[in-house]
Length: 339
Image (cartoon, rainbow, N blue to C red):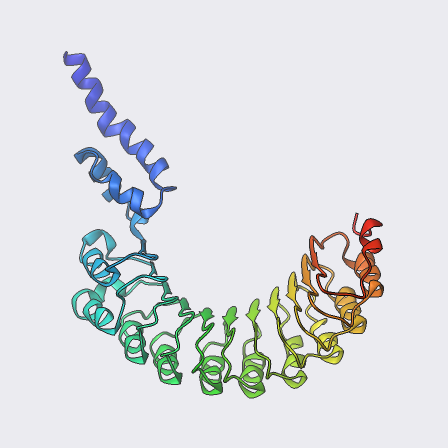
């Protein structure tokens, strides 16, 4: 009996902590919390590793506001770095005000904040939450029509180190916001302004002039932009991902300038109806690391541009979408030009 007891002590003190450290690092947060209830030994082991408690994930959860306050009140979350509230329910300005008043110190190290789909948050909520997160690097507020330039003003004032910004679907954002972002976030690496329909050439040009570190740029469904702005994309030497779906005013001239982005890996030209073989050939010759290219719905491209793509990009191009390109013949594909 004494030997069994000694073995159990060794098991609990040495083996369990080692196993739990390995297993828990790969578990989702909800499973990790469940493990706390298994035994006092496992509870102590998990709490002894602060790196396990850097993320709070309330994605699509109900009563997320109260859950957030409760979690941030626990000592283990006092250095949280990532909070995900994407499509969480019951998130409003007042919940963010509660977080600030009750748990402000817990957000001092926060680096990633996802508020995607939290449509009840307004400029006031943005002011409150960003005022508590001085180290924020990644901010996402996709699909919010209540946030305006006022909210973005609070963001750039309170958070000086943002490098990844997602404003997709924020239809009340104007060029004023992009001017602020361009002036304050010159180290920006990723920007998504999909369907920000009030954006004009002026806003995008300021971004392209100041933010030369951009690697990801999403301009999906911004049909009012013109070549005057698109040509300036050539100023982004580190650009890898570019989404221009629905760029109705993009011409071969603009696309030929974009071809100067030598590191481009993914390019979406879906429904860029003014583009022809000329522009695509320029891309093929300039962007030789291209792995994904969508020409969906472009009537001005033909087999000719595919032949050039085959010559210059066959070693890297993995995905090529030519659906709706009626001047590209099926015979080209049966010839396996990318084999």
